Image (tube, rainbow, N blue to C red):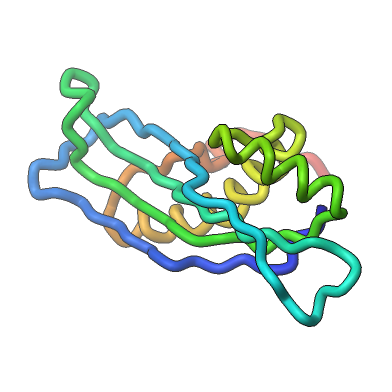
Length: 144
């Protein structure tokens, strides 16, 4: 499998007026569509377009159903696959599933692409970060 394209189609961040600090952050990655594509430049492999939705929801501990802030990224990946890989992937998608070995590598790619962008939105909206950022403290020693 080779990623030959990555595009965002929606970038959204919202912080509601009732937002207070001390929220739990829920990460979610969802695959919304998978379809075979015809691309003239790619001759020896099959190309599929995998659409995704990556979201971060900030909620109160006591009101888990009410979002007080949310960051959403939607987009798609263009993947070049061997014919057999593409066939297996499309077959598993009929059940709205992806093979585990395939899913892990795609999750890792989406986390790398989206997490960095989410940090920027969190800074702009003054939201707590969804991942911990290393910090120095007085008296800590740096290894050379």
